[in-house]
Length: 139
Length: 139
Length: 139
Length: 139
Image (cartoon, rainbow over all chains, first blue to last red; front, top):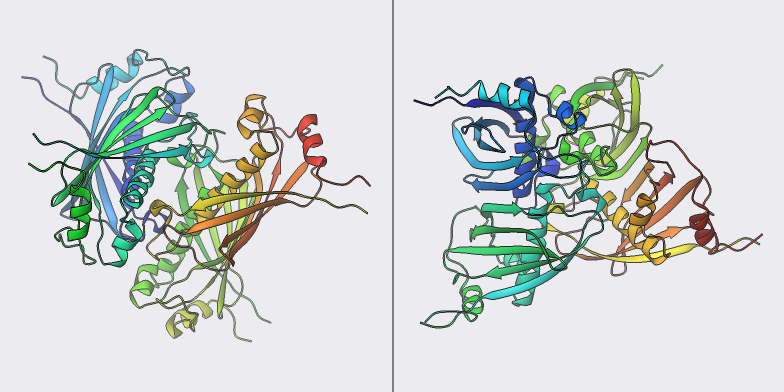
């Protein structure tokens, strides 16, 4: 049986700048929070995203999706759960769940590919793949 | 046979503030462009979104999705095609296509519901439904 | 002799979304960091900004100023020093210094007034004035 | 007698994403509008900013200032007047006035320096200086 996954949790606090006149967090800003959670996950894996960029790699977003279940408000303390459920290959899919205490406020995912500075798709760096794949059981 | 749809086109120009260190438009900012296109479409329908809010309605985003096909760059002149393909009911689904000349740069969609000031789901205003449904053929 | 001041320090980390194609933090985003520092200072004073708004007060920005001395970069860990040097009255002036380790990256200030929900200037709440003025020596 | 100045006017419309829960435009977003006005002014001078960057120049913001006189609201149609009042040299100072009809909503300024890709100060390109200085009378 195959199994395993990578998980990481990031604490967030809603900024006034992130709200809109509806009194909620503007929906587009959740994608920035996804980024904050991803960067944190990469840190915890020992693969800081800043270093990946210095080595010439980039991880642009190919696809982004969000389901907004409950609004979030200025100064809310939130918890973003970031999960990699599928063994990373040429593409990397990341799932997100945002909670305020026990309330699930939103879910979403992003898909990424490794590219070089010219924006051309490249093989993921071997050490990145290995570190990530260690979380998934061997067949 | 049923048919018909609502379409609207909005010209956009990429702001420096909207780029990131990758040199492209930051992916989260495309959702703001969707909003600009939606607001424009509502204007063209004779249903300015500002007026809807004054009448006590809001149209929060329940779901947002984007596929990033090609990066866009500072100062790019873009065209955002906004389409309502499904006859609006309790929910309103809007589709987006972003082009730079003949190049398709991204596609996406958002789903909305009408709510009142307290955030509770309400029936869409009759005049809004009627104006929108006029674009769709009767069964 | 008069003296005293209120100070508060907030840790910040540069988000990818906050950078621009120059590779630096986009200058407009520093004003959001000022807000994060202000909110934090109010918390430390036992006067959460969220509560002030619930009591019907708002503290809009009347004036904002920034001097950019050194660029900051994605993932930089920064420290924002927020200071109230002048005894608060009808207006509240707040000063900011942003450091990366020992490097001073920027300085700035904002000026605020208390207004009610209608946007009309009002006297600052007595408890807020008192808590803030406790930091300043009596004449 | 010396005189003359460069002026340019840019139409703006407030986006929903630019508002905050106070119901106004978030103050930090005005600096993005300054940028939109500057880029437009450079276009009108026949010196598109995009081209300057391609030639290796950048014009980072050294100082930014804003006085907020009246709030602006979602969907407001605004006019931003951008002015260069001082003959440009190593530094370029730009002034801004934002109006809604006859109402002056805000004023501000930014100061810029020309730098190269490494961020080092450089002499402004000769053609830029000349085109800009043509607007100022000779002594």
